[in-house]
Length: 283
Image 1: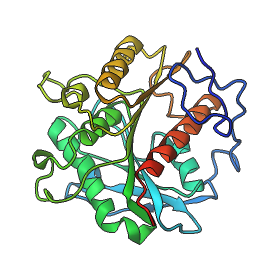
Image 2: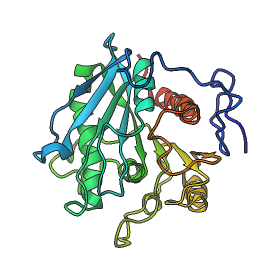
Image 3: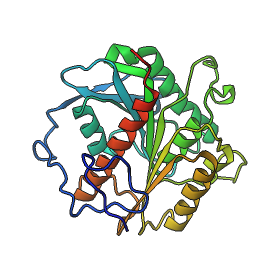
Image 4: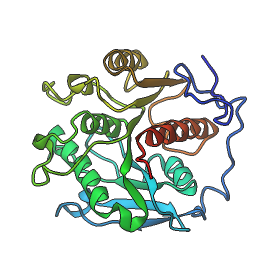
C-alpha cells in the first residue's frame, strides 16, 4: 500500500492507501472532550416540518469568514438510524478551523422514507445553502458533499442527479450541482429492494464531479472488493475518481478521532480544496 504523504509535499491524493505513519497528524488544540475553540456550531432551521429529522448544524470559524467553501456531511446508519452530530466530527472541526463553512444534516429514515426521499433531503440542504449560505459566510457556488456509509450513498446519488426535478419537488429551479463528493466507508450498491436507478453507478455520467472514495480493508459490512470495483467502474465513466484504502480499518473508522482518521482528514481537505478551486468563479 502507498503511504499518505504530507499535503505540503504532494499535490495528489494517493489511490491505494492511507497510513498514519510516518505522517505526523496535527494534534488537537485541546483534549477532544473539550469543545474545540476554533469553531462555533449553530443549530440550523428545519428544512421540512418533520421534527428533528430535517435539521442541520452549521460549523464555522469564530472569525466569521466570508466567501468560504462549504462541506456538507451526512451520517450513516443503514438509512434507519443515526444523527448529524455523531460522525466525522474531526473532519468538520478541522475544515471549520481552516476557514470552511461545514454543515452536518439529518434526513428522513426508513421505514418512513425511501431512497428518493433521502436524495431529496440532500438536495434540500443544497437549496438551503444556495438561499441562505451567504448569511453565514459561505460561497454557495462551492459545495462539496460528503457522507459516511449510507450518507456516502445518498450524497453520490444527489451529485449524479443535478437539477433533476424528480428529486426536487417544489424547488425544481434550484441549481443543485456540486463541486465534488467524498465517501467514507460508503455503501455503493442498490437501495433496499434492488430498485433500478438507486445505485450511484446507475446514474454515472461523464460530466460527474470528482469523487474521493476512502474505505477500510477490514470492513465487514461493505466488503472492500466491492468498493474497489465501484471506484474502478465509476472512474471508467468519469475519469475523476481517487480511491484510498485504509489497512486494518473497519466500518465506521470516522466515528472517533485517531491518527489514522487525521491522515484521512488531511487527504479530504486537500482533495476538497482542489475541487472547489477548480470551480471557483473569477473575481
